[in-house]
Length: 293
Length: 280
Image 1 (cartoon, rainbow over the protein chains, first blue to last red):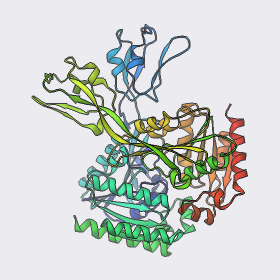
Image 2 (spheres, chains in turn brown, orange):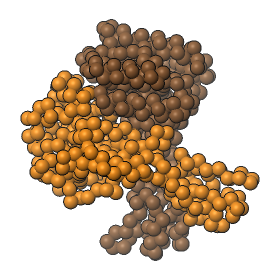
Image 3 (tube, rainbow over the protein chains, first blue to last red):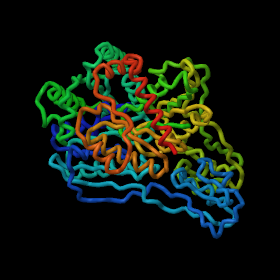
Image 4 (cartoon, helix red, strand yellow):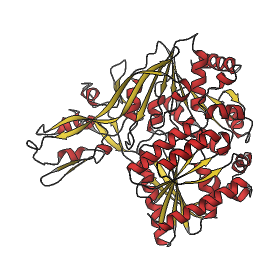
């Protein structure tokens, strides 16, 4: 069983659209959406949810006003700006800023602060017409997106192992921080989807450097390549110099948006050149994955 | 006034709106521009600031003085992030898990822990014409962006019109970026993805009690669901930017909209007026 993650650095380059195509093209796989703070793959896979699990990432500090003597010690130790004093002198804790370190609860001389477990998200196991699918929803403004990503991936892997599947395909989040690192760790290959814009190139370089920092193999594809051909050759040069295989160039296509509004994975919606290129990319990825490192 | 530009979904045009708003206001207003997308900062491609100062940012992480440490395990017990493991006669620190809360240092009964700086990234300060520019860049391999965002935001001077370009998503880095703004602009696109993520962004801003309005980018492609949603939820749509290949090509080269289509300056100034009216 091999794990593939689709990442990009920059948001909106087409990760989810391409992931949904792989859901159509790959047989014997489980799909996972690890963009837990803005999940979208479900909009194309139309899951029938079979299991819902609550996720509790951490605890939040809560103050008992009756017990609090307003001594202010907690104000001094909180490094996350989560504790403040109102005009009336009442100490309040902002649950959104609280990172759950609990230092205030340890330091409070009258034990007025309690750490409460908070439900900070949900994750789902579903059936789709393309096979099993695991996705999640992080609560608004919650911490620990990395931990929730790990839950999603653990379940996806478990299903793949139990059903003797060939692939876990993970639609990753944008950026290079905590949830991306959690999405990438232990995968066999990361497909980086970029676009020929200065921002796209810069973000691609950073995310590939991040992947190689964690010793994960990468391959790259360019979406909407015909927007700027000069930038395409810059990407080609960079990939060559850094030994990153460039495995496809998808043309800009208005049909993609149409397929999206109808909620259909693009390769199912259209058979034009963009669709053919995505099929080629999947074939090359499959070869890379099966060949191993 | 502090205006933050956010979106939920990535790639909808946050940076485009932030940059063009800043450039349109430059001259008549003193503008401070903060790129808080420290994982993937991009605004500098468009504003091309002259960087005058570069400061590394450190997170305070524990350093154990093993000659004093009794391996009692208190620090590992209180660490909420599993960043410390105490073995029989040694102690392991995992800097990438540490949030820098300072709990272990404060609560060690032997006072055997001091703090040292663990570098997470840099912030760079400069200017572009009259716009004061600040951005953060997370070091490759670092997981924790909120402390770096806080370091960028320390430089806010609210005498200026402050424009904050936020990262995509709705979790902690976004909260850190938009917190304490007077107004938020949510940039979206008329697709099911755009709508799904807009709903999340709206919930986030309501939770934070920040007033907001919506900008629809590539407004003429896709469907009408965003308009319907905004109307139903009583959310003002403050601007529509049509799909325009020229804008996309200019973007790919690091050019702003108003650089290639100066008539947009008026539209961004109108947008600013609307924001001023709505913020109270």
